[in-house]
Amino acid sequence: MLWLQGCAGLIGFAALLEIVPRVGLVSPHYLPPFSVIMVALYKEVQSATFWIALGATLEAWAIGLAISLVGGIAIGIAIGSSHLLRTLTHSTIEFLRPIPSVALIPLAVLLFGSQIQSTLVLVIYASFWQVLIQVLYGVQDVDPVARETARSYGLGTWAQIRYVTWPTALPYLMTGVRLAAAVALILAITSEVAIDTQGLGKEIADTESGGAVAVMYAYVIVAGIIGVIINIGARALERRVLAWHPSIRLDAAEAVV
Amino acid sequence: MIASLLRRVAVVLALPAALIAVWWFASAGSENFYFPPLSTILETFARLWFSPQAMHDAVPSLIRLSIGYVAAALLGIAIGIPVGASRSLRNLLEPVLEFLRAIPPPVLVPVLILFAGIGDEMKALVIVFGCIWPVLLNTVAGVRALDTVLAEVVRSYRIGALARLWHFVLPGASPQIFAGLRQSLSIGIILMVISEMFAASDGIGFALVQYQRSFAIPEMWSGIILLGIIGIVLSVIFRAIEAWILGWYHGLRRTQRAA
Image (cartoon, rainbow over all chains, first blue to last red; front, top):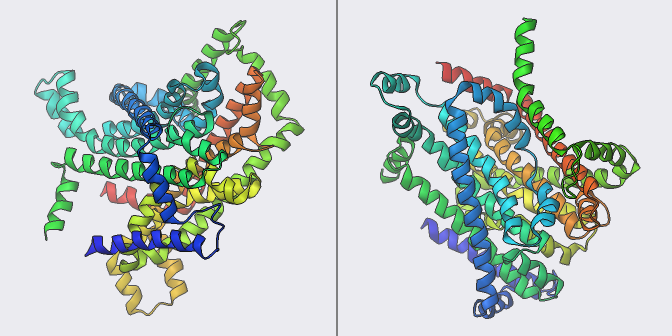
């Protein structure tokens, strides 16, 4: 019932996109009817260009996200475990975090041109902070009693990280993963639009300047679908990884009732 | 008292000072074309951004950003409240809104160039379209999660629509709304810069690209630093406003946690 209404909403939106240009509210040169966009998409899907662009975007997204995850987790646990490091680095992290990663665009272009490394610089800078901040919150949230208990039982540093710190930080980390996954896609596309690295964003910019408006919208829709898949995937991953966690268990119990 | 204050200041400043010192000395006398000495960058910074040039580039960018951001915030809240309050509207619109939010905002730049050309309207519109979704969806979530008991009390007392909005709905949803506003702020800065990089005749993004293309490296670095400073200042302002408006909420959370 619920998804039926959602489908109705989506169909209504598609119908709106079809009707608005047809009745001339918006010039079809700017916004072609939905059916025309879909035909363009159908043709585009059969071309190699499409799959190369899609692959390039996903590649930059995945590599960038993976590097920021590994870096964010390692550095976050290292800093978070030491009170001294935490206080010393706090101001620097708060200072560096709001620096917009687009500020690095000219530097990336000079160093790497329009290669994938340029995209990676932007993606990593933006998503690294999302992961780091959440891991830091998570590590701070460790129950002091649990930590004392672990220490009394003679757990070593690694065992403490594995059995005390990690499970506490995991819910925070998953929030970080979810945010970072979305941000990484935004920055990957940003780089493709602004510095012409290979990918969906570049196709969108190129088709716009080439006047192939329907194809451009087809790519915009694809970019949106990728975004939706990433959001849904990240949420599904969160539920799966945290299936043991009270907050998720509670949700599930309520859903059954 | 003063000693502890001094120690706190020292702790805050130690690492940033060390990092800047490392940059300063490592780059001093640098022959590397791409990494000029920090002293040169700072001189360029003072020359460029404390001059009429700044009026030409930085001010238009910031005006477009503030117009776009404020418009997005108002629209997002105004649309989010009715959608959040009505279950059927929510079920109908949620997938569409999720899809629109998932479109990476930078793709809007080429799209809106079609509609609005490459003028100021396009850049402000890009920022509105990019920033509205986090605010809207968070407002929806916030209104939806309003306290049901309070809602019934408000209804039983027949409190008027305006008073209900101002004293119940908006404050109740405000923590969520601010979470959305914060996400929007970083998206807004990204869009401000890349809409200018893509097509413009003024603005920080435009200036940055010009410097980079003409290999004016110290100027380029000074632009990077300016953008960094803008990002930091905006986030400080945002936090001050949030602390002011959400002060009651953070206080409540603290006492709840202590209890």
